[in-house]
Length: 535
Image (cartoon, rainbow, N blue to C red; front, side):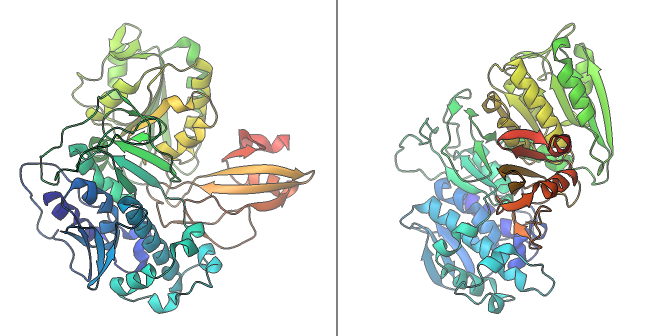
């Protein structure tokens, strides 16, 4: 019951309950949760009043999955025997034939997407591709603009999901959560991403399923039944989803997903920087044979003309020198060298992060074998995120990953987006993961949305080009993107694989010259700025 009441406050952070809440700038961040002995809610954070609320059984297996929906709708959560969305007194069941979690996910996606369509009825809105394509939808979108949340929601629920499914944006994140203390404390940050949340009592096996468990206990109190239920080093295999990124909240090492750590998000909230502040980067190369990556990284960081950079390079540091780097007020550290579980290998021994009082580094990329443990310790000491490995990695593959990550992060990609692109470049990519906040970035200029292009030659003088914009912390679900490659002036919801455009070789060359971005040409990875001369 306490968790239910706490999550019910999330909707207070919406800046509007109109359709424009679908813009990320009009959704404030939900309040943080900390598990304690009793419920304490600050004055003014009571559940919002209105004609929409959710009803679920008082157990974490039900409360956690509805948290993003509760937040987006501004709807409180009340205890009941079966789950339902109650709109102006009418009860809509959430335990449909597809199951509870799937029904909740579809309800969130439907509501959010329909709001995106309705908001275009504002006189100042640009032409939205999805709105144009769904002009024949059997609902009067213009009539819904300005209506109450309950009236809009009732109309949305009448729209067949199959009519809109093909036009939905790719969902930003699917989060797999264990019903533990960490799961509770992570849920405000997952709700902020509008994540699809799935609860696992056990650890997912290689086929993506969790072991069967007995009837779910009531774990919605502040401290009951919140013990971790798997071994810390166990490998976690998550089921495939269509989301841009996946996250795991629980012990163990997730394969192909981020490991979300609530402490990292709290560190981020304490350490936000100004938009116009200089980006401070340190590149550390503690292995002479890997100097090529260090030099490439040093050259890559700071070539972003939209932001000022201060890049320093260190090589062959001793333990005292590396300690000073980690304790410095830095936005980012790119480390190249060797790491053991007990610490970083230095010229005079090994540095373990654990004894440090605090680290000043926000984000660390630890491009070394088995850097997982030290990356986790950096977060425990104050970092926001770290990119780490959990197995041995081949030097050649690590070099390719390191060079690619440097350029992607410099172009404004968040950590999870950069790693998803870099993974496609090397067979060792699956051995890397993000610990902490996957939304973290080092070079996100205001209003800039990074993208990847894929081009396929379909003739001697013609290419088929598909552009995929990536979401960022500042440009999340509900943001819009206009691709420069197309003559079409419409904008598209992101994240999404945009409809393919056809261009002549000359037009394609102009597009490549327009900016520096990652591109796959006939399956081969390149950077647009490096490729023009080869065409």
